[in-house]
Image (cartoon, rainbow, N blue to C red; front, side):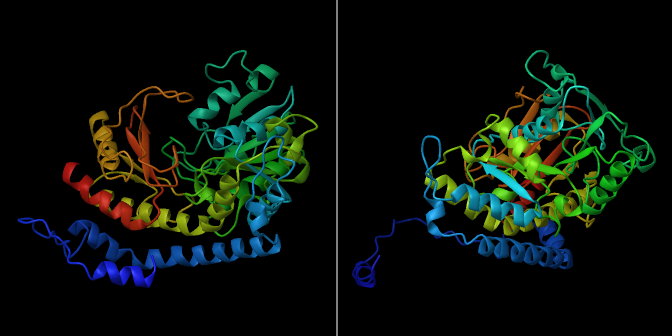
Length: 436
């Protein structure tokens, strides 16, 4: 609106409804217990901002190195041959950011599980063993591996690939003694799940991942190490390829999409292995040179990656706040209050079905989208148990926006993540404290 227009409109009297009071906002938007927690966490928030700044510096440098320009946002149709270098530039930026030789970042990956599956099929061949080093994998990978309900649909098991896992130690961390002797000659890939998934365990930091890779390679130098990087990107100032991971994979509607990317996923790591994963996404011989994307999707993937460190920093602050408030009310939390963060997930053990559902209902009621919808527990493709989701998000399933979910099984834990600013969780917690 021009200044002239604004001035003209301002000269007209404003009609005010009669009898309607002006609603004044409260002096403080937060519940008193939440406000006290916020004040107590200022040192931790500053430490998050320090990591955020370092990650933002790395991302900005990657964009400049790839000479990103407006023509890269043009998009393409059909085979995608006429994309003006957008795919190549985005792959280059992402590989630079995570310290990998190569990357493939595509909207055609429709979930993190899809990207991880492509990576696993790239690494494993009949007769190989897949070794999960951090206990059981996330529910949605069970059918990919073939340990639940996936006979004759093309699981790893169907292709003659066996599976074994190293149970967690009693404290919920990696069992280093068991891991030191776990790798066999036939172990083709060691799978590291960085985040906790739906397990009540510690998420893995970069130092844990480095130590694991060193142990695996000492036992079998030919064994590849694959990291399920979902929820972990940009939480710390290094990424798994920087400490020796052969491949990583994840989703763009989580951390690296910055709440902007509408879809997609990625695989990054050693150049030859990324090419093999690309052949699983498309077909042998097609690799990374195919795949169209509308212009608005390309721009959003670039912009989301640029914004990702900021969005992740805010989600980490939200997790710190959830842990502080809920532990003060007597609930078990993982990670513990003020403990170092390795992903954006904050788990709270609620103890029973009713409390878990109530928690998710309150979160849904405070969301900007679908606040009037009542979340209902039910069966979801890929999950072993009934699951309830609260995700009133602009992008369907975007857990980098404020969301929570949990399986309806003991210990009835809710897994909270995302938020474009920590104040979102501060406001939600105020409502939760009224109900739980």
